[in-house]
Length: 130
Image 1 (cartoon, rainbow, N blue to C red):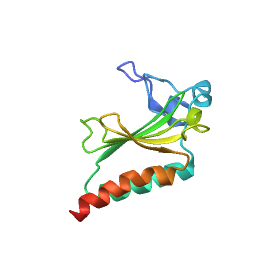
Image 2: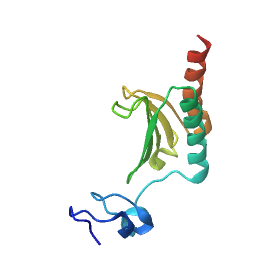
Image 3: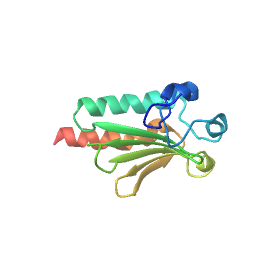
Image 4: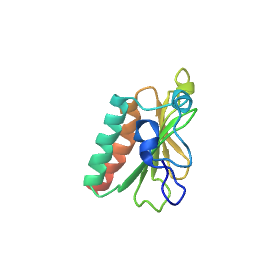
């Protein structure tokens, strides 16, 4: 069913998705890299603490063919402050996880998400301590 403006209702997508530009199909889901529940819980825990501290205000999650990206923003109209990426192709080499600054500089890369996220936790503690 479609609305009067020619858009498709969100209930028509599998799983209740809302994207009109990129319809969700089972084939697309199989080809995407995603964060698992443990990884997402760890990232959202950090996000919640940073929101409570007033540092972050918005986030976006992108599940792409080659990587999953969690972007955090100070304001939603700006570029992301940090991008937390999972790239399984790098798992056997440098590590699947990385934290990338707004400038594109890779702050830390590794095999364990908790260790990689410490680079953001340390910078937040330094700001609070000043």
